Length: 140
Image: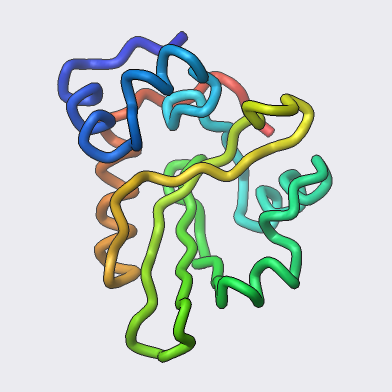
């Protein structure tokens, strides 16, 4: 298990839903254990090949979801969704991939609780998360 600094724990408590409980019960779902990928395409392929439906065209269409270009630190990526379809009201999420808490052969997509109004703000947050949280030991 990756050792975290006090600053990293505080950051995670602020931005990960029920961090202490989930870190204890589902440690594989935490960002410090995220899988590393060489590209967003490799990430999408691995998640889809594992049996997850997160990136299925129908799912992306339903949520009006877009995947931003580029990985941040080989483990974080950004999506945006729009429930109303209006161009100016997209919400951006910083996400990572790890084993499912239900079936560990399936890769699940997790996100920080914090949502952003712009891609620029989401990227800045992802860079901060990458700098604070030690890099994972596994690569996909």
